[in-house]
Image 1 (spheres, one colour):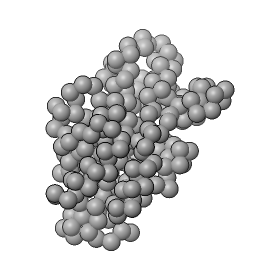
Image 2 (cartoon, one colour):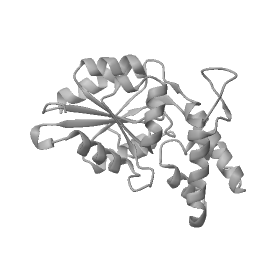
Image 3 (tube, rainbow, N blue to C red):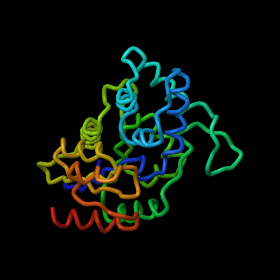
Length: 239
């Protein structure tokens, strides 16, 4: 385990490290079709990126007695069924989670942050069993110190729960001088971090609707990937 004090950078996955909207939205469309329910419009489909899938299904009026089935259908298309076109290998069919690309420059920024001495922890509302193969497939695992996500049974669902789970696993100890910062693109990142007493640097290249990050009290917004290391260093130097 890392020595104390340690500076922890918590990183969201969708919309922060990877451009994942294609696979998420395609899996959502398949889910609503399988349920025999109207597919949400494009604007609403974008809102599925970030929150836990069950939260977005509830927001779109999927009845309580259909939620478990809806989540199972979504996860089957997202994680297992190779029915979507692979954007990285034309002609190949993959499950939704691989209809996904790493944002240009992210790997270089992660390397720099590791070299700067930060503990880099993925903290996603996506189930951990999905986060791990995604990070492995896109060669992010070797650039991260830990991968932490939601639980399959929804007992660990929200971002604050994932952050606390991560802290427990890595032995985070504020009394020993440990500090942490969230990097993300949606209100879930900002609200979850605040519930744990943390600030968030918001990523403009992600999926937040206009004004969302500001409304939820983001600490700072960076416009481009290449600003990430500087923003993190600036934060820890002043806190």
